[in-house]
Length: 120
Image 1 (cartoon, rainbow, N blue to C red):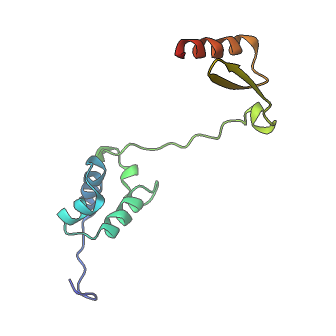
Image 2: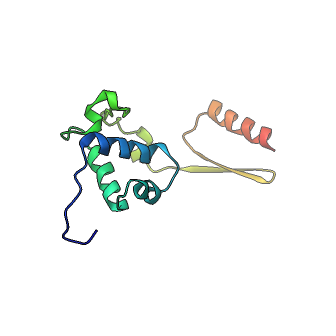
Image 3: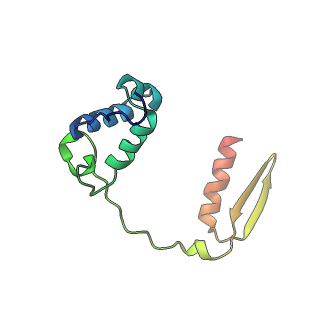
């Protein structure tokens, strides 16, 4: 269609169906878009808009359309290891070199060595 021509209006239900089809198949977006006479950019736009939680007409707000609602959980507390620089202990077992955090306790170190022995 020539630029500046009439635009096709897609009902919301049809958009949701096409977006769902684009997620359900392993086909490239361009193939799904072509099947419905869409430009791939238009399908990407619909996917982005229809996945925005709380947006009017968003499939995320409608449980009957096959989309699963997303719940964002609060962040986990920081790990005690995240702020302290890691001190590495390097142990050579035959051809294997094992690097572990120096704060690893003896039972943890035993489990690491057992795993290395099983792999050898």
